[in-house]
Length: 314
Length: 286
Image 1 (tube, rainbow over the protein chains, first blue to last red):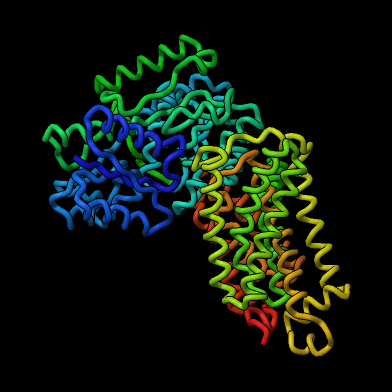
Image 2 (spheres, rainbow over the protein chains, first blue to last red):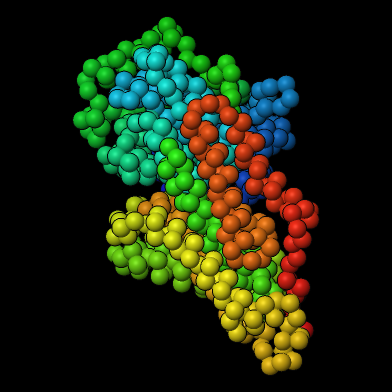
């Protein structure tokens, strides 16, 4: 069985999303004995040709790492009905709303709002100024999920807390604009926020730099980002992209691949937050216990975390 | 709040201003400067690499400025000496730098996303103050040189009527080479600031600022002071947007984001006074 993977911008070595997908692929190669190959596209149309190349050369499963592949994978999956496809963070929308993927395409989605809820609650419990911040990359529904969950988490434990929120832009470039991220963060810190959660790709690195400069805190995203700014990262909201890749390969190997939407939340260990030797000193035991109690409630279905705000101002 | 807003306006304007004034130098000599984006990015990368390798902030600044000048020299060799199409060669430089910085980032720092934090940048005591001062000072100096010195006159002459300048013994090729390299060094300083402000390099961190600077240059009618002022206007619009968002009022951010572009379109359409490009801009000399 042959599995091909096409990376998002950044490719291998992004210490985040792409690397996590690659870990899942590596593990599948090791434990399931599949043949794994990958393509690191440059800009724009390279992505589509990468997917086509793999689909046309007889791969059994072709994986696109990132929402940016949604349209291309939807189209190519229809053209190659005998090849299986997977799209991480699939988000194809048309005038009528969400477009359900075809049978040979599985949309691997994460309930980022659940992980964001927990770090939101943690931030609110830790905030001395009762003001926390959120910095989004591109202003799109995928990122609104982070914001909505984070705000709901804040409100759950601190109804009077304020959440300052900002977006870097409206194009994919907004995910790699650290200078803008830093300015957004500096403005929020100046507005009394003491902890900021960026969901903004490498734009978030600017938020970390602002946190370090202003001696405040920030929260990492997607993977454990402690090493980017040691001492300034309260925790990270992690997405287990590697688990979703591995599980998809295993499903195909065991002939139980099903297309459609598959979501990974707290219950499936698809999202989580970091609590380890690095940040244990920052988080009091009582706060940790409160957040863990919330985790149990979400898993039990007692708390339903919103994935968008009822009135999103943009 | 006011203080932090003014600070944001000035910090955001630094790369716009320096790249726009760099653009003026090249374009007044008759060479279109689309490569500003690549120069910003390349300079940011070399500055990071330089500061990392030499362990000195000044070493980093020198590497960044040198890289900007070298990229501009490469561009000038293509279009001034080789007489290649200026738009095509400029875009080629931008694409080359985008790929090359990623390649060397991975090679040197083992990441396709960003370099580690470069501690030696902390040797600069007040980096923002220093770069803001430079971004104010260089447009003034450039305006003076362009308007009042023999070299400035030659740059303007080869940008308007290279044949007439040549008949008086000025060598257009040589003057343009110098002007374009100067353009790269000035714009390179803008790239250095991007790296200094973050204390690291991030892939693609120029993020279209070179093109915004190009618009500021045109808005400023190819004059250094006006271009810097246009850059300041763009910086102010962005700072207003950032501050509005942080105020949590649910302000229409997209409206403010549109402002610089609408302003540029209005000026280019001929309102707000005529904006005339150097007559020989984009033409290879005979």
